[in-house]
Length: 285
Image (cartoon, rainbow, N blue to C red; front, top):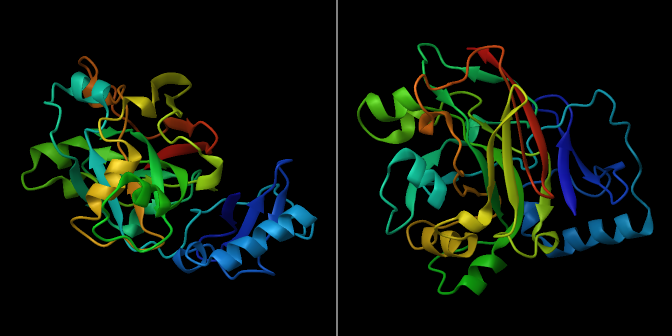
């Protein structure tokens, strides 16, 4: 299933995109798409049955804002330097274990909402990523099978980063990762049954129509199953939590001088195979 949330900021309503691309209203069945729903297999089964029976009313999608596909996100765990080609382009040593950092849930915006360049920024960068959404409580997982069983679905994420804040201002990466609007998510949450192999997805990003990133999740150093298993050793994952699994080569930081960091007026578009497409205009905060 392709689950999404539509409407104005703070008043999004649950919806489903059917196999014919028709937007269907879910508000008669569920109150929202959140961790509670993703952990409720009976409720998900009711949605599947209603969709198969044609019982879900259509919604007019014209002019309708798409919000983040998951509400009430508890935490966003991010994996740094998780693509072989990205590690090479930045001159970084391939990590022996996943590099973890966090993004605050309030960085999440809809897939087509504006991205704000923070005040004082000179190095705002793009990063298209595969996001994993957790569907059951996961702690101290032993196997990759258990890890994949904990995944509710997948989405497109844009891990926007301010490199000067992240690298040149001391401390950890958080200052360059948690600026307002720095985690567009969506358009859809695609349930795990529709993504049989998360390591076989094309992943792409354009800036002002120019292709900048064109990779595949097969290049991940630590695949999705290992990432989920690994993270569960250090923190408990709950339904609705999100893991951003890293970005392929092609970021501004990895390009020759003068590096083409984002500026107000730029337009970024990004997609992951089967998971939809985002489009953001850049503005000053």
